[in-house]
Length: 197
Image (cartoon, rainbow, N blue to C red; front, side, top):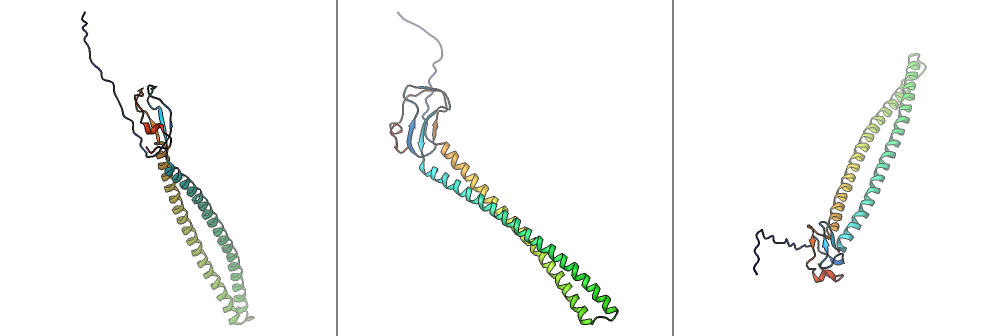
């Protein structure tokens, strides 16, 4: 008896799946002969170095976030103190200006000496100079504080980027199937917990 057939020979696709990260065998979720779909998690590796790095980055991120709050708080209260000083100085300048006008009137009436008038003028000018210095100090503190905040925010952003990369690397320690099919074989080391993969 003979049999004839026509058609196309289709060879099955075989894929060897490798781990994207170096780690230690932790858990295997499949056995030889199991039928799986694509994206099925086949096994998970333990990557202690990456986990330690992730924990360190998370601690650093929390610390730097607290530092940012401290910088913002210090800037806020420093500017409030300077604004209060400025308000008090404005009051002193107003009062000194009134004293200058009063001494000027007394001098015009010859009820006061020139030296007393000059003393009040000098005090008035001195207060105005103090105000100029204070305004420069406020501007300096404001710009310095803003720069410190930007630097701290940049540091936090970099830590967040590094943390995201490490978390992606940890996620890559899950060995997943790129296609649907049947498990033909498993690496023996993968089935022994703690084996270096």
